[in-house]
Amino acid sequence: MATVKPELQLICDFVNTLEVEDGTDELADGAGLGRWLRTRGLWAGRPDEKDAVWARELREALRELMWVNNGGSADTDAASATIDGASRRAGVVVRFGDGGVRLVAPKGGIGAVVAAAGEAMADGSWQRLKACRADTCRWAFVDAARNHSRRWCSMSVCGNREKARTFRQRQRRVPE
Ligand SMILES: [Zn+2]
Image (tube, rainbow, N blue to C red; front, side):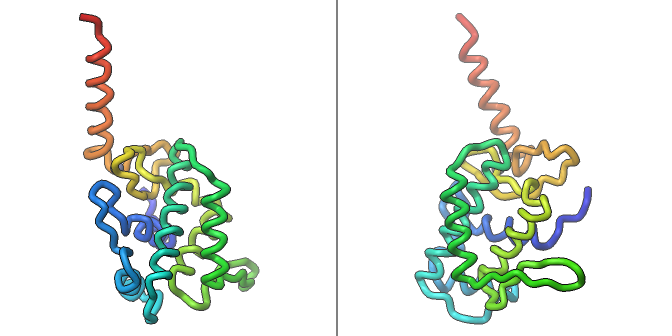
């Protein structure tokens, strides 16, 4: 299995700051967002509550698009508009160098996540970022399978849970 690009892992880590199943949220407030950014060396400032609101909006917009990557349906225009707004606020810019192009966030912060997402969309690796098919999970993961066929964050947890559910439904449909 190929190693996952750190930029893709960063996007997943950001989306996974919320445990959908029990609601535990690392970005519940400005202090939490500050901690998350500091531990990744992305920003030394002090985000406020509004920054945390924006970060959570960005996170859920990214999750929506990852859900679409996994066969789900969502309002992609709305999600894109949210990410666009985050990009403008964070001051993400296009830079040219070494014969290529890069998106960078000179101010740091969650702009680094936006820049990583933009680059992934540009180079096609974005399609490998998925939100788990289980409604109660929606965990973000990188699909490293050659044919992009992975649907669950973990076959042993969500995949088996889903298989069991399908099995039960089938059992129920069997006439008495
Ligand atoms: Zn899952």
